[in-house]
Length: 84
Figure 1 (tube, rainbow, N blue to C red):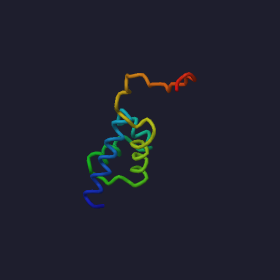
Figure 2 (cartoon, rainbow, N blue to C red; figure 1 turned 45 degrees about the vertical axis):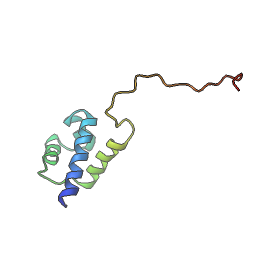
Figure 3 (cartoon, one colour; figure 1 turned 180 degrees about the vertical axis):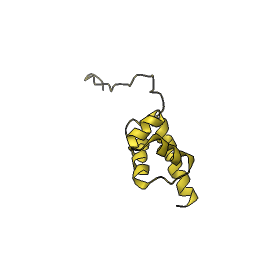
Figure 4 (tube, helix red, strand yellow; figure 1 turned 180 degrees about the horizontal axis):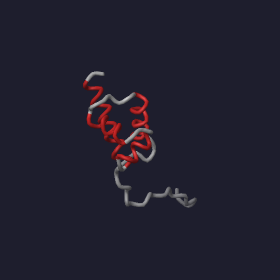
């Protein structure tokens, strides 16, 4: 695997780690040992495509954001019938 792709895979895995909240949680999600996950994060071994794709699902899937929710209330549309 070329270095740029390998780095992209590692960065995706790191983002999935941030979303999962812990290495143990991510390892469980990817169905691998924590030691195996650490090897991938360290770049000691290439990340298999199925595990990479599982990480991608976490990064782009629902609830993937790490941002705090917007504290402003959501504006409701004006449904009054007397409005012209």
